[in-house]
Length: 157
Image (tube, rainbow, N blue to C red; front, side, top):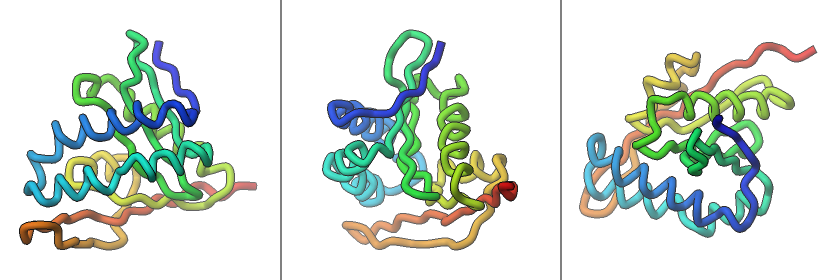
């Protein structure tokens, strides 16, 4: 049975491995090499360590006990939601997104996130809407395109 747990400082390398393996397998189908390298560098061990030290990172284990996915929640923003390619399609990403949304819903009325091209449709199906479209110039003249998206939450009483 899948299990979500808060990542500890010693889990940073696991989070980095899940992140990099997923980016390397999925993103080249959507982005040029310079953009893929940008993503790999953006999700650095330093940023991951900062987030784990602050208690903002969660991991999910698949039914076989392997750490197969991760999500980071910073205030009302979801970051670094990745599931290893060989575990995609089994509901782990949905479970991580449910978990992140429930954490945010405790204190906020809206969720924000940056959606990469491969994830945009997933977020749209979950009720997120585009708030802005951005392009970053990366090495070699390549472009990285992404959407800022938000989801309004039910008003807390």
